[in-house]
Length: 203
Ligand SMILES: [Zn+2]
Image (cartoon, rainbow, N blue to C red; front, top):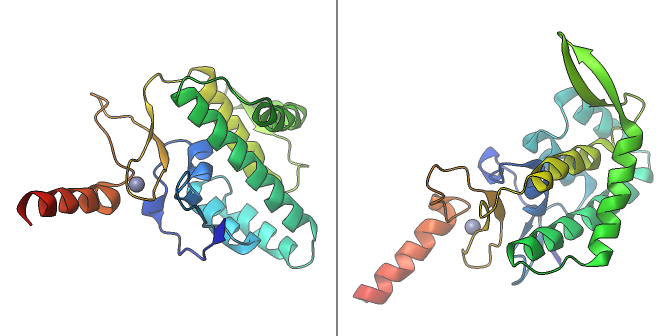
């Protein structure tokens, strides 16, 4: 996979769920994939922007990565999770059986999540929060797997879509009323396709 130092902007976060947003740190799944988080620093930019780390946690993680080889390992294991999520969601979309290797990666993270969650009561409401002792380097993957769990528990049939844009392949939750969303971003992939159609008709 080609590493690309992508400049993340808020508009890149279009998945509607952190698990899909993690999948979307690769552009061109199934075509000519580019890895848009080639290093830990770029991963942290994405993590902050997608909301899987808050500001304080991101600063803490940034301090840690300077000295810790654990950061590289954490990134490698996030990427393993990313691939498993992409592959599982793709098989669900195509109504194909899930691959045991994907399920085993996802189940390992589910176990870690179960071990790290605790019940807290916030303003009279029950909240399942991740234990504060967990390293900030592990937090993004745990929050992604928590998001994946809610996505997959009640799979919104027909609402997980893949952008058909050329060399895109991003996945998103279509939350439009009539399930009509086609593109990751109309101004990025949608307009390119429209322009091509227009040229084909008129050129
Ligand atoms: Zn797209």
